[in-house]
Figure (cartoon, one colour):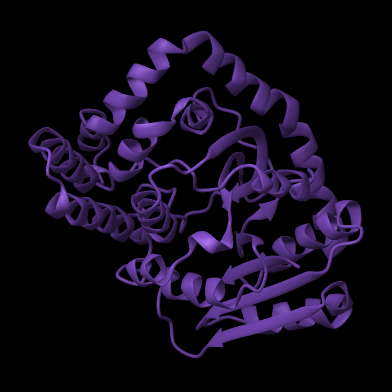
Length: 328
Protein backbone atom coordinates (compact mmCIF):
# COMPACT_ATOMS: atom_id res chain seq x y z
CA UNK A 1 0.00 0.00 0.00
CA UNK A 2 1.24 3.49 -0.88
CA UNK A 3 0.50 6.32 1.56
CA UNK A 4 -0.15 9.98 0.85
CA UNK A 5 0.18 12.31 3.85
CA UNK A 6 -1.26 15.83 3.80
CA UNK A 7 -0.43 18.10 6.75
CA UNK A 8 -2.57 21.18 7.15
CA UNK A 9 -2.92 24.32 9.26
CA UNK A 10 -5.17 27.24 8.25
CA UNK A 11 -5.04 26.30 4.57
CA UNK A 12 -8.73 25.94 3.69
CA UNK A 13 -8.34 27.93 0.47
CA UNK A 14 -5.42 25.94 -0.92
CA UNK A 15 -5.57 22.41 0.55
CA UNK A 16 -8.00 21.28 -2.22
CA UNK A 17 -5.15 21.96 -4.70
CA UNK A 18 -2.88 19.56 -2.77
CA UNK A 19 -5.59 16.89 -2.72
CA UNK A 20 -6.34 17.33 -6.41
CA UNK A 21 -2.65 16.84 -7.21
CA UNK A 22 -2.83 13.51 -5.35
CA UNK A 23 -5.87 12.50 -7.38
CA UNK A 24 -3.95 13.31 -10.55
CA UNK A 25 -1.11 11.00 -9.48
CA UNK A 26 -3.50 8.14 -8.74
CA UNK A 27 -5.46 8.45 -11.97
CA UNK A 28 -2.47 8.99 -14.24
CA UNK A 29 0.13 6.66 -12.74
CA UNK A 30 -1.41 4.57 -9.95
CA UNK A 31 -2.79 1.56 -11.81
CA UNK A 32 -2.84 -1.56 -9.66
CA UNK A 33 -1.82 0.21 -6.45
CA UNK A 34 -3.78 0.48 -3.23
CA UNK A 35 -3.66 3.82 -1.43
CA UNK A 36 -3.88 5.18 2.07
CA UNK A 37 -4.60 8.87 2.68
CA UNK A 38 -3.65 10.49 5.98
CA UNK A 39 -4.94 14.02 6.45
CA UNK A 40 -3.83 15.93 9.52
CA UNK A 41 -4.98 19.29 10.81
CA UNK A 42 -3.11 21.13 13.54
CA UNK A 43 -6.00 23.00 15.14
CA UNK A 44 -6.87 25.25 12.20
CA UNK A 45 -8.91 28.35 12.95
CA UNK A 46 -10.37 28.51 9.45
CA UNK A 47 -12.41 25.84 7.62
CA UNK A 48 -9.54 23.55 6.64
CA UNK A 49 -11.14 20.42 8.08
CA UNK A 50 -14.42 21.15 6.32
CA UNK A 51 -12.57 21.76 3.04
CA UNK A 52 -10.83 18.38 3.28
CA UNK A 53 -14.04 16.61 4.23
CA UNK A 54 -15.87 18.20 1.31
CA UNK A 55 -13.18 16.97 -1.09
CA UNK A 56 -13.40 13.46 0.40
CA UNK A 57 -17.16 13.33 -0.17
CA UNK A 58 -16.43 13.04 -3.88
CA UNK A 59 -13.06 11.28 -3.84
CA UNK A 60 -12.86 8.88 -0.89
CA UNK A 61 -13.29 5.90 -3.23
CA UNK A 62 -9.77 6.51 -4.53
CA UNK A 63 -8.36 5.20 -1.25
CA UNK A 64 -8.36 1.85 0.51
CA UNK A 65 -8.07 3.64 3.84
CA UNK A 66 -8.42 7.25 5.04
CA UNK A 67 -7.05 8.41 8.39
CA UNK A 68 -8.26 11.74 9.77
CA UNK A 69 -5.99 13.20 12.46
CA UNK A 70 -7.64 16.49 13.44
CA UNK A 71 -6.41 18.38 16.52
CA UNK A 72 -8.50 20.91 18.41
CA UNK A 73 -5.44 22.86 19.59
CA UNK A 74 -2.32 23.77 17.63
CA UNK A 75 0.73 21.69 18.59
CA UNK A 76 3.22 22.71 15.88
CA UNK A 77 4.46 21.34 12.57
CA UNK A 78 6.63 18.64 14.13
CA UNK A 79 3.87 17.11 16.25
CA UNK A 80 1.52 17.13 13.26
CA UNK A 81 4.22 15.52 11.14
CA UNK A 82 5.08 12.76 13.63
CA UNK A 83 1.44 11.89 14.27
CA UNK A 84 1.02 11.35 10.54
CA UNK A 85 4.22 9.28 10.17
CA UNK A 86 3.15 6.96 12.98
CA UNK A 87 -0.07 6.23 11.06
CA UNK A 88 1.66 5.27 7.78
CA UNK A 89 0.92 1.60 7.02
CA UNK A 90 3.22 0.82 4.09
CA UNK A 91 6.94 1.16 3.44
CA UNK A 92 6.48 3.79 0.69
CA UNK A 93 4.90 7.19 1.33
CA UNK A 94 5.12 10.88 0.50
CA UNK A 95 4.38 13.89 2.73
CA UNK A 96 2.75 16.98 1.22
CA UNK A 97 2.09 20.25 3.00
CA UNK A 98 -1.43 21.58 2.59
CA UNK A 99 -0.40 24.59 0.50
CA UNK A 100 1.87 22.68 -1.91
CA UNK A 101 1.24 20.39 -4.89
CA UNK A 102 2.68 17.18 -6.25
CA UNK A 103 4.31 17.85 -9.62
CA UNK A 104 2.68 16.28 -12.73
CA UNK A 105 5.27 13.50 -13.08
CA UNK A 106 5.19 9.84 -12.11
CA UNK A 107 5.74 9.80 -8.35
CA UNK A 108 5.64 6.00 -8.23
CA UNK A 109 8.57 5.71 -10.65
CA UNK A 110 10.59 7.76 -8.14
CA UNK A 111 9.54 5.74 -5.09
CA UNK A 112 10.25 2.51 -7.00
CA UNK A 113 13.94 3.46 -6.68
CA UNK A 114 13.62 2.65 -2.97
CA UNK A 115 14.10 -0.97 -4.01
CA UNK A 116 17.73 -0.03 -4.65
CA UNK A 117 18.26 3.04 -2.45
CA UNK A 118 17.30 4.02 1.10
CA UNK A 119 16.69 7.70 0.27
CA UNK A 120 15.84 9.23 -3.11
CA UNK A 121 16.55 12.98 -3.18
CA UNK A 122 14.42 14.93 -5.64
CA UNK A 123 14.06 18.47 -6.95
CA UNK A 124 11.27 21.01 -6.54
CA UNK A 125 10.01 24.18 -8.17
CA UNK A 126 8.60 27.21 -6.38
CA UNK A 127 5.45 29.01 -7.47
CA UNK A 128 3.55 32.14 -6.50
CA UNK A 129 -0.10 32.42 -5.52
CA UNK A 130 -1.20 32.96 -9.12
CA UNK A 131 0.53 29.80 -10.32
CA UNK A 132 3.61 31.36 -11.92
CA UNK A 133 6.76 29.26 -11.50
CA UNK A 134 9.82 30.99 -10.01
CA UNK A 135 12.55 30.86 -12.66
CA UNK A 136 15.18 33.18 -11.14
CA UNK A 137 18.77 32.17 -11.83
CA UNK A 138 20.45 30.28 -8.94
CA UNK A 139 17.13 29.77 -7.12
CA UNK A 140 17.61 26.01 -7.46
CA UNK A 141 21.37 25.86 -7.00
CA UNK A 142 21.04 24.08 -3.64
CA UNK A 143 18.62 21.62 -5.19
CA UNK A 144 20.93 20.29 -7.89
CA UNK A 145 23.88 20.25 -5.49
CA UNK A 146 22.21 17.20 -3.93
CA UNK A 147 23.58 15.24 -6.89
CA UNK A 148 27.14 15.84 -5.68
CA UNK A 149 26.73 15.49 -1.91
CA UNK A 150 27.49 11.91 -0.96
CA UNK A 151 29.23 9.85 1.72
CA UNK A 152 30.89 11.77 4.53
CA UNK A 153 30.13 15.11 2.84
CA UNK A 154 26.41 14.27 2.98
CA UNK A 155 26.55 13.53 6.71
CA UNK A 156 28.55 16.67 7.41
CA UNK A 157 26.34 18.87 5.25
CA UNK A 158 23.09 17.73 6.89
CA UNK A 159 24.55 18.11 10.37
CA UNK A 160 25.49 21.68 9.45
CA UNK A 161 21.84 22.35 8.66
CA UNK A 162 22.11 22.40 4.88
CA UNK A 163 18.58 22.64 3.43
CA UNK A 164 18.91 19.55 1.25
CA UNK A 165 16.76 16.44 1.15
CA UNK A 166 13.59 18.39 1.96
CA UNK A 167 11.67 16.71 -0.87
CA UNK A 168 13.37 13.32 -0.52
CA UNK A 169 11.40 10.10 -0.27
CA UNK A 170 12.67 7.32 1.96
CA UNK A 171 11.79 3.98 3.49
CA UNK A 172 9.35 3.96 6.41
CA UNK A 173 11.67 1.49 8.17
CA UNK A 174 14.19 4.32 8.67
CA UNK A 175 11.76 6.03 11.07
CA UNK A 176 12.79 4.50 14.38
CA UNK A 177 11.17 5.64 17.63
CA UNK A 178 14.39 7.51 18.38
CA UNK A 179 14.06 9.49 15.13
CA UNK A 180 10.42 10.38 15.80
CA UNK A 181 11.10 11.34 19.42
CA UNK A 182 13.96 13.59 18.28
CA UNK A 183 11.67 15.42 15.84
CA UNK A 184 9.24 16.10 18.69
CA UNK A 185 11.87 18.21 20.46
CA UNK A 186 11.07 20.97 17.93
CA UNK A 187 8.09 22.78 16.39
CA UNK A 188 9.11 23.67 12.81
CA UNK A 189 12.29 21.85 11.67
CA UNK A 190 10.65 18.50 10.98
CA UNK A 191 12.55 17.64 7.78
CA UNK A 192 15.95 18.69 9.05
CA UNK A 193 15.59 16.98 12.40
CA UNK A 194 14.33 13.84 10.67
CA UNK A 195 17.18 13.52 8.17
CA UNK A 196 19.82 14.60 10.67
CA UNK A 197 18.81 11.74 12.98
CA UNK A 198 18.34 9.19 10.19
CA UNK A 199 21.83 9.85 8.81
CA UNK A 200 23.27 9.78 12.32
CA UNK A 201 21.88 6.29 12.81
CA UNK A 202 22.77 4.93 9.35
CA UNK A 203 26.40 5.43 8.34
CA UNK A 204 26.16 3.41 5.09
CA UNK A 205 22.90 4.85 3.80
CA UNK A 206 22.36 4.61 0.03
CA UNK A 207 21.14 7.78 -1.71
CA UNK A 208 20.55 9.03 -5.23
CA UNK A 209 19.25 12.24 -6.83
CA UNK A 210 16.54 12.67 -9.49
CA UNK A 211 16.68 16.02 -11.30
CA UNK A 212 12.93 16.32 -11.69
CA UNK A 213 10.48 18.20 -9.45
CA UNK A 214 8.54 16.03 -7.04
CA UNK A 215 6.77 18.87 -5.22
CA UNK A 216 5.73 22.41 -6.16
CA UNK A 217 6.28 24.78 -3.24
CA UNK A 218 3.89 27.69 -2.80
CA UNK A 219 5.60 30.94 -1.77
CA UNK A 220 3.43 33.20 0.41
CA UNK A 221 3.88 35.98 2.97
CA UNK A 222 3.53 33.54 5.86
CA UNK A 223 5.80 30.92 4.33
CA UNK A 224 8.98 29.82 6.08
CA UNK A 225 10.69 30.66 2.79
CA UNK A 226 9.84 34.32 3.39
CA UNK A 227 12.70 35.91 5.38
CA UNK A 228 10.42 38.32 7.25
CA UNK A 229 7.69 35.91 8.35
CA UNK A 230 7.34 35.03 12.08
CA UNK A 231 7.50 31.37 11.10
CA UNK A 232 10.87 31.92 9.43
CA UNK A 233 12.28 33.50 12.58
CA UNK A 234 11.23 30.58 14.77
CA UNK A 235 12.51 28.17 12.13
CA UNK A 236 15.97 29.76 12.18
CA UNK A 237 16.11 29.67 15.98
CA UNK A 238 15.33 25.97 15.90
CA UNK A 239 18.01 25.36 13.26
CA UNK A 240 20.44 26.93 15.74
CA UNK A 241 19.07 24.62 18.43
CA UNK A 242 19.68 21.61 16.16
CA UNK A 243 23.25 22.71 15.64
CA UNK A 244 23.80 23.07 19.39
CA UNK A 245 22.46 19.53 19.88
CA UNK A 246 25.00 18.25 17.37
CA UNK A 247 27.84 20.24 18.92
CA UNK A 248 27.33 18.64 22.36
CA UNK A 249 28.15 15.16 21.02
CA UNK A 250 30.82 16.09 18.47
CA UNK A 251 34.34 14.85 19.33
CA UNK A 252 36.25 16.68 16.59
CA UNK A 253 37.37 20.13 17.78
CA UNK A 254 37.47 21.38 14.18
CA UNK A 255 33.95 20.25 13.29
CA UNK A 256 32.63 21.47 16.64
CA UNK A 257 33.93 24.92 15.67
CA UNK A 258 32.17 24.62 12.30
CA UNK A 259 28.91 23.78 14.06
CA UNK A 260 29.34 26.82 16.31
CA UNK A 261 29.90 29.15 13.35
CA UNK A 262 26.88 27.69 11.55
CA UNK A 263 24.77 28.18 14.66
CA UNK A 264 25.67 31.87 14.73
CA UNK A 265 24.93 32.11 11.01
CA UNK A 266 21.43 30.68 11.60
CA UNK A 267 20.82 33.47 14.09
CA UNK A 268 21.10 36.18 11.40
CA UNK A 269 19.18 34.40 8.63
CA UNK A 270 15.82 35.84 9.67
CA UNK A 271 17.09 39.33 10.56
CA UNK A 272 14.93 42.17 9.26
CA UNK A 273 17.95 43.88 7.69
CA UNK A 274 19.01 42.62 4.27
CA UNK A 275 22.62 43.60 4.97
CA UNK A 276 22.73 41.66 8.24
CA UNK A 277 21.27 38.63 6.45
CA UNK A 278 24.23 38.76 4.06
CA UNK A 279 26.41 37.59 6.97
CA UNK A 280 24.87 34.13 6.57
CA UNK A 281 27.17 33.63 3.59
CA UNK A 282 30.14 33.65 6.01
CA UNK A 283 29.32 30.14 7.23
CA UNK A 284 30.72 26.60 6.86
CA UNK A 285 27.58 25.56 4.98
CA UNK A 286 28.18 28.13 2.24
CA UNK A 287 31.86 27.17 2.18
CA UNK A 288 30.82 23.59 1.31
CA UNK A 289 28.37 24.86 -1.30
CA UNK A 290 31.00 27.14 -2.85
CA UNK A 291 33.53 24.32 -2.99
CA UNK A 292 31.04 22.04 -4.76
CA UNK A 293 29.93 24.86 -7.05
CA UNK A 294 33.47 25.67 -8.19
CA UNK A 295 34.38 22.02 -8.57
CA UNK A 296 31.31 21.09 -10.64
CA UNK A 297 30.34 24.48 -12.10
CA UNK A 298 29.58 23.40 -15.69
CA UNK A 299 27.49 20.39 -14.73
CA UNK A 300 25.64 22.25 -11.98
CA UNK A 301 24.61 25.11 -14.28
CA UNK A 302 23.50 22.61 -16.91
CA UNK A 303 21.41 20.67 -14.38
CA UNK A 304 19.81 23.83 -13.01
CA UNK A 305 18.81 24.97 -16.52
CA UNK A 306 17.44 21.51 -17.30
CA UNK A 307 15.42 21.46 -14.09
CA UNK A 308 13.76 24.80 -14.82
CA UNK A 309 13.58 24.81 -18.64
CA UNK A 310 12.25 21.28 -19.03
CA UNK A 311 9.61 21.46 -16.33
CA UNK A 312 8.29 24.95 -15.57
CA UNK A 313 5.74 25.02 -18.40
CA UNK A 314 4.37 21.58 -17.51
CA UNK A 315 4.09 22.58 -13.87
CA UNK A 316 2.38 25.89 -14.65
CA UNK A 317 -0.18 24.14 -16.84
CA UNK A 318 -0.68 21.52 -14.14
CA UNK A 319 -1.53 24.24 -11.62
CA UNK A 320 -3.96 25.88 -14.03
CA UNK A 321 -5.71 22.57 -14.72
CA UNK A 322 -6.20 22.00 -11.01
CA UNK A 323 -7.40 25.57 -10.51
CA UNK A 324 -10.00 25.10 -13.27
CA UNK A 325 -11.10 21.78 -11.80
CA UNK A 326 -11.65 23.38 -8.40
CA UNK A 327 -13.47 26.26 -10.06
CA UNK A 328 -11.32 29.19 -8.96
